[in-house]
Image: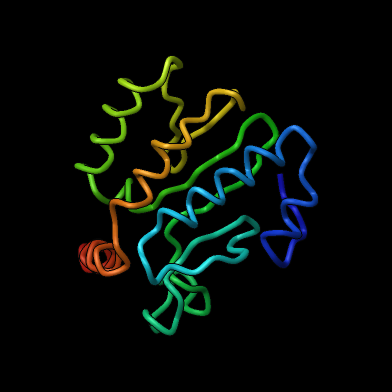
Length: 152
């Protein structure tokens, strides 16, 4: 679902009541777990965590005015989505997450091409999300991103 929000707090205020607590909790885990250098704001209509232009002036290749996206968090119609760009660019990180999820969670992992879908609000693996967020630094992400851009 699209929300007309200018800040993460504004985004959260617009959520249905049953989504507020899980999104607030995920946001807090992400903020606490991300290595130094990532910034938070609204990015592509979602709560976003990105590499700011002050660190990576080139911005996102699709729209250089946008900072380099890394993680987005969104409330969709039937689920909460966590978009982690680094996981899709780093196969080892993706495999680690799939394995850790299967070992720690009782529900089947629901992943799309670009997101992890959490349909059951009481089954979100918050600690695992925190571990995932801590695994890649700003420098790691820039290096992976630039290597991927060069291949195109």
